[in-house]
Image (cartoon, rainbow, N blue to C red; front, side, top):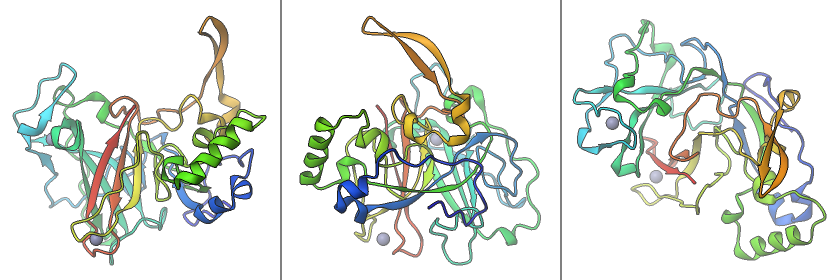
Length: 313
Ligand SMILES: [Zn+2]
Ligand SMILES: [Zn+2]
């Protein structure tokens, strides 16, 4: 099941408690493979795939800076910048680790950066830049890129460096991406079930930061088209949380389960044990209110246009 062409993953999603593809044959036909990136705090090098890590960058190429001052807004008390603001590294992925990314011809390196401020035109979220490179052409790399500018940036938009452990898992669509009739039958199945598993939270699309596969929507699905009218594909998701208060039950890797702690809490007057799942926010980012940044692309257009969409609760 978990074929990891980019080397064995350190982290493994456990098998699901129920096989939804057997319960609903239409779902089996809609199964897709996603690559969970499993970011974990670490010290990646510039020649490694990473989240928030150093990028392999040509020394003679200027570091990108944002000058869209009129687009900047902030819900916190930071001083908005009046000088060009350095973009910060969000993801760097080599084809050897995740060949599933739609690398344009003669490229093997995907770099995702963003401006660490809310931009009005993307619905108060960081403005994303995606770059494709041929890593072998970078013979004289920049040894240290410009540091982030915390006084003028949202702290929670500056990811802490993480290493990645790509893992391939099968997943089913978010329920809202299913035909209405099937949604209804799954709802009915949940109502009649003698267990606590929810299709949406536990058995459908993988939460967290990932490449390809289905989108784990936070709000209603929005499928975008490119300028040529092609429907865009989900390229990757950058998530605030690797899992939430429900999805951790089926999506926490086997290797992390022994590290789950519990603390006493209170829900509606009942005392309960609340789980403390390790590494739920490995890069310490928070996009809106526990939001996700979805990056879409068109593989039918050679220049790989990308569009981003942010959703939060
Ligand atoms: Zn900006
Ligand atoms: Zn297109």
